Amino acid sequence: MSLDQARKERDRIRDDAEASRGAIVAPVHKPDRTKTVKVVAEEWLSNGIANGRWKSLTYLEQVRQRLRDHVYPVIGHQPIATLGREMMRQVLDQADCKDKRTMWVRTPTVADQVRRVVADIINFATQMKYRREDLPNPAAWDQLQYLYPSTTTIHTTTHHAAVEPEDASHLMARIRELDGIPARALQFILLAAVRLAEVFGGGRENSEPLLWRHIDGRNWRVPQTKKSKPLVVPLSDQALAVLAEMKLMQCEPKPEDRVVRCSKSVLRLVLVEIGMSGKQTVHGCRALFDTWARNIDDDREPLKGNLIDAALCHKFESETQEAYNRGSFLEKRRALMQRWADYLDDDSAARRHNLRIVRH
Image (cartoon, rainbow, N blue to C red; front, side, top):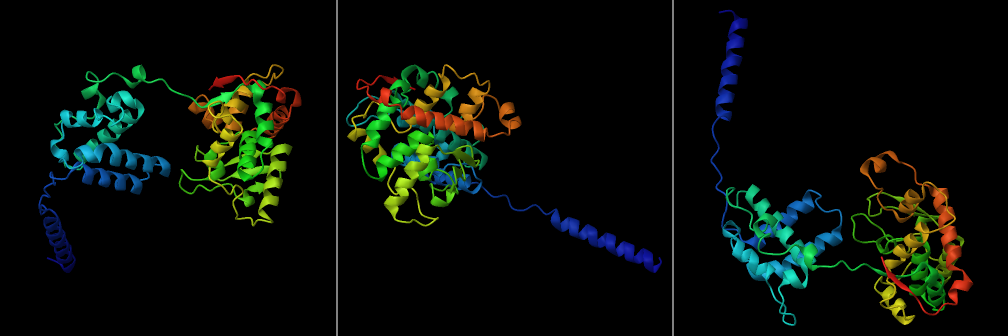
């Protein structure tokens, strides 16, 4: 054969040799089916963190705490390969030393969250070959629905307490009577109708508390909200006045300093001090604003619903609406928030003493 043919034959034989070496079957790795529920659960948590399963670090810690409190002490030592329905029932039937009712009846929301977390862990174990694929998931609802009632039939949702809008100015007047940063912080939250996480930070990766550099003129630029998006909060004259008071309390703070230098749990004590415990909650300030805004009699704004949702940083009614509506209604929200602040300053309503309570 010619030299060119010889080179081609050489390359063909070399390629065949490489292919035959790659075709050698690697030794089959036998899965470890002796792993316990606790070991697999921690592996599931690590896998979820690495893959960005949870946006909220607060929720991740809550899941980990649920496992430590309710799962590990009961079945944490059991091999996940042999986990069955009876073992799962031991978790859901736990009784408290003070309350002998089962966890499913005593705290149905927590119990159902524990069940769903364990179901996810078992599905993860099945995919990792720690458990046979033909075995049913003992934590799945279709395996337990005939043994336990639905949580909706045994649990009534309790919403955050809030006073009626007619009594909002009296609430503001009572808060204004107190001195100190906690009272000013609660006053600011009521005026801005924002979430606690947006003021104090935490709960989300890369989230920041309210810093002085976030205040830009008459706007507060929130880097990240619950919707994982930035938000511009228009500040009313009254909200800016509260910020000015807090700046005086801190004696020329730096741009990187926190605006609210206290714990968010202290805000509840402010409500206790003014006699509003059980009548108003901190998060209920948002419900109070929402109720007031949706019941303005002389407001003919056709986009009022979207305007209020934008002010509260809520999702719109549909995903299509959320995707297509790129506007922020900034100037309309500015007028709305100023009107809300003026309403809170209404002296005639502040004279009321018998507060009417509504739960939203």
